[in-house]
Image (cartoon, rainbow, N blue to C red):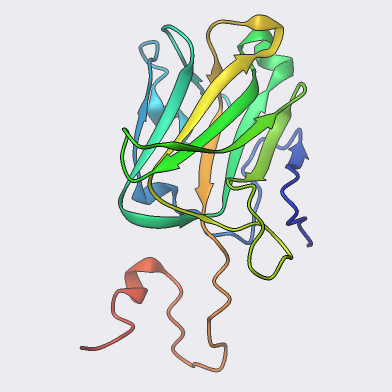
Length: 193
């Protein structure tokens, strides 16, 4: 399956379950927080894998989701599940992506505008071309923040039904190795000191 690497969003229209993508999911390494939430609709609903649950903001705009990593991570893409048919004015229409070393030095890396999304949308975090000129560069950061800058129909609160942060594809793997380490746990022991 081919995926465009020119920065245009990949839309998996109407797909409720998270699509299988070639980029590794690094979401589990992060500590997640949100700007506000209604009781029972917190940050845990973003990562539970159930498209029928959602984060529901409950506070002043702009709303945001923050992922803090324990070390600097290479972040390539974000995959987010939104449903305009179910959420109407609660559906985000403009997302601003920020990254940095801490909450106080975040820099804008990308702005994405969405028109009545329904399903998983995957897009690059950066808008900077890579060295080869055949795609976009990953962003290296400790903190990634997704800001809901606007909702459809000027809605105030927001719903996000799923969110994944994806790293770059590791092209340096050696397929000739009979003991190829693929999971993060095994990679910890790949080299001896």
